[in-house]
Amino acid sequence: MTEPPAVRVATRADVPRIAATLAAAYPDYRWTSWALPEDGLAQRLSRWAELWGGLVPVLAGTAWVTDDCTSVAAWTAPDAPPPAADLQAVIDRDLPRVFGARQPVVLASERLGALGRPDEPHWWLHAVGTRPAARHQGRGAAVLRPVLERCDAEGVPAAATVYTSTVVRWLQRSGFAVTHSTRTAVDHELPIWTLVRQPARR
Image (cartoon, rainbow, N blue to C red; front, side, top):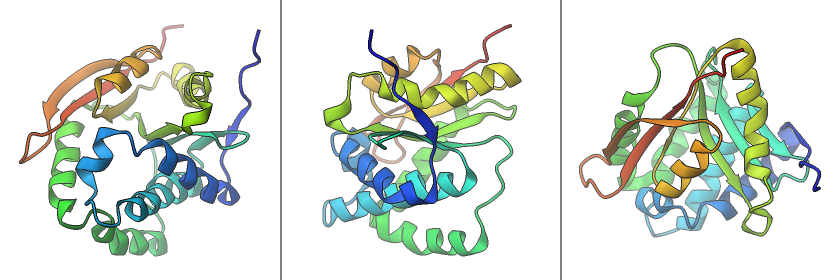
């Protein structure tokens, strides 16, 4: 039997590899071409991955990676404080650069997706991805596991918003269930599903 991949909490030194992994994983995700303007799309995606998939969760201690960083899961903890002022200033500066004219509809769509999130404190899966060459080896499920096990131990839900039925089915295999479905704001171009995983009863 194949040994499960080693998983650890990501460190600041991992941020470039995390960004590279998410940038490699997301080009075929429908959200990417919908949310990011076509001009400079690769650069926009890389910056999004560096900030929201890398720096923000890594500095909060809520990103998990396989040891080779070919798979990553970035979370927001229930009790997460706001980013430090200097990091927030970078986010405020770069958010309009990343999304360009798409920013209002992206943010409005995120608010629609949030309608299905639990009322109680919960872990929020912000980004998860695996490099294409490393897929179908259980790495994605492995990087989810530390938080899901913590959720079970502490009796806390986990939640995520996704934009493809493929990801819905993948998360359902880890115990998530759809709690809300809608479509993106203004253009209604993409479906939005919010999924919640209730903690396992002990």
